[in-house]
Image 1 (tube, helix red, strand yellow):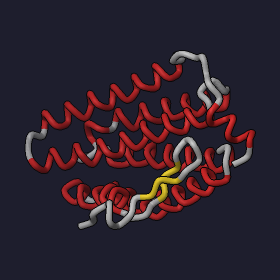
Image 2: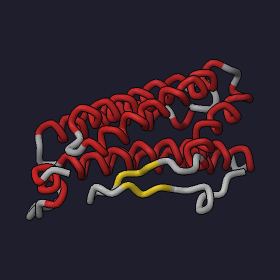
Image 3: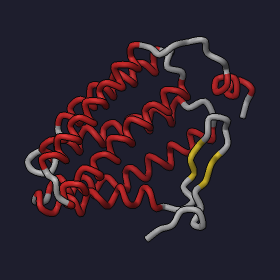
Image 4: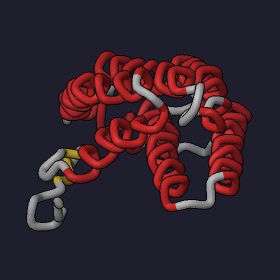
Length: 198
């Protein structure tokens, strides 16, 4: 890692939470509210599984965007524009949660894939270290590889949608050895011995 990149990752910031960050979090508070309503209206094992699938997808968007905003420095205009774009598209995605498993499949999938691919491409271009750029290139390839499952789920009948959409979530959390970058430039790996697969 170069000195410049290390400085960008470690430079101390005497900065509080910005309004953009607060509004960004509110968008996903709305998502949690939508997920809660979906579960309350579908108090079955199937409804719980549907809620879990959507929760993992929403959490992935929120946590990934927050991590990337931290890496790129939330005070930069480029980072703020990224947060605003995710907020706008995320509003459409979160609004679709209530009907994602009946008539609103496409309304959830299209914003989700736009956010995940757009963020990854941005990080490939702007990440401060080569290790991070390589990580997001691998992440983008994984998003592209699992996108057909999301698309197929939106195309099929609502009764079969859960099986298609559960595929990307299960695969993402069960792939051994997938490298995850740490802010200090190291790569934390989940290995087959520490990450059980079923």
